Length: 148
Image 1 (cartoon, one colour):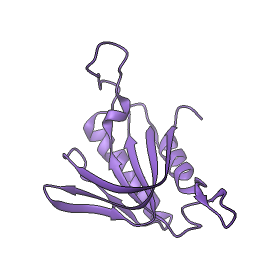
Image 2: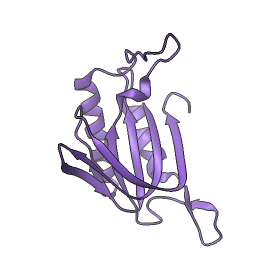
Image 3: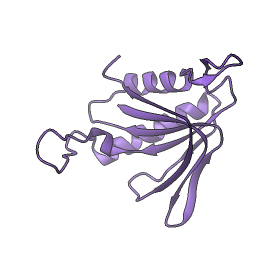
């Protein structure tokens, strides 16, 4: 499982001109899932992301987590995080998970974040989405559950 986390002041995602999810101060999480990803990977990613200390404290140090600042999430499915660009100029996406499995894991990720008390907006799995955000910093972090 791979994620790109962007610290944002606000963000939203829309499909066909209709906003499907949004967040205020918090994270936009672009989440990619592979077939070999397990519930253990899922739990690891939820813990790692929601506990990530990348908000500044009173001394200007990145020392506060999403919970510390009362932040929320906007989670967007992103199979292109599994792009293989080693050959040619057209990426291959064969490492991305099966859509049915990936959608299930994506929805579980969102649900687990909500169970922890975080508001979590969401995109629409498999749709062409328009994401707008105000990146704060900018701060962008990449996490892969296979590289612990």
